[in-house]
Each structure stands twice: as C-alpha cells, then as structure tokens.
Amino acid sequence: MKNRRLTSLALCFVLFTMFLSGCGKSIEKQLVDGGIWYDLDGNPQVVYFSDGTGKDHGTLFTWSITEDNRLYINEDGWTETYSISFEKPAKNNSKVKVADMYLRLIDPYGDEILLKTGGLVQIQDADYDWSQWEQ
Image 1 (cartoon, rainbow, N blue to C red):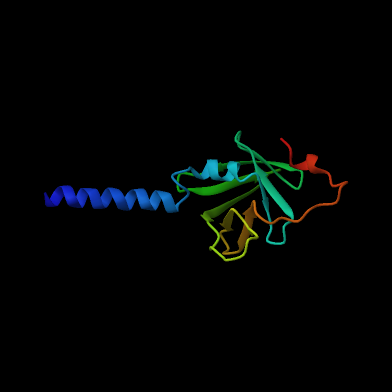
Image 2 (image 1 turned 90 degrees about the horizontal axis):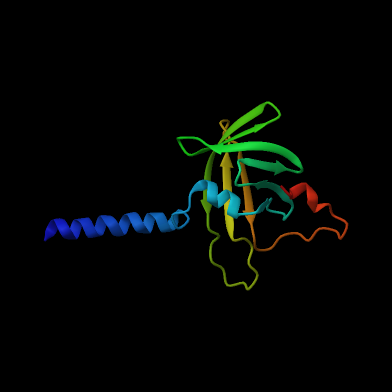
C-alpha cells in the first residue's frame, strides 16, 4: 500500500513538472509554435521553422537542439550554442496581455537574450516588409 502511494506521488510530481515545462511539448515544438519571437519592445527578432531553418531579420540560418537540450545555431559559418528555457509570464490584473511565453537564451559567455511571443507586440508601419519572416 505504501509503495503504491509513493508511486502515485512520484507520478503526480512528474506530470506537474511536465505541465510547468510547457505541458510536455518538446523544445523544438515550443520554438516553432511561438511563431515570430519579439524583443521586449515588441520588435520582431527571429522565427524558427519546423524543418530546422529559421530567419533572423531575413537572414536564413539552421538550428537544432543538442543532446543536452541546448539550442545550436549555424548562420553563414558562424555557430553559437545557447542554454534555453521557456517561461510563462506572471499573472497580472491588467486586461492587456504582455506575452504568451518568454524565451530565455544564454550564450556560453553568460550573456542573456529574452524574447517573447504573442501578447502585446509593436504594430509595424503599413509598408513593413513581413516577407523577411516567411519561410
């Protein structure tokens, strides 16, 4: 009886942990599902496609997730590997949604990039060239 109870508690812990880390979605799926990732001022920065390519302000690059769950990027011979994490925004009482999800990237030197998806983003001029974000 005690073993069954411990097993149930362990299972609940695992499921709760999966829920907190993106409802069990893979890192790849979370990157792609985010669509265009914006800086904190609402300017578009990067988009990841499901085929392992992406665009950074119109510049094509390839990306993958390493065995130790780091983001590996190769852009014109330049490579970088980032620690990666996703964070849900804190609840607030405002009716304005700031972001659906935050993406935190940390390079090997400890420099941090924080991006967001969804929520409140800057509206670009009518003549803004969105084609640079298409696959």
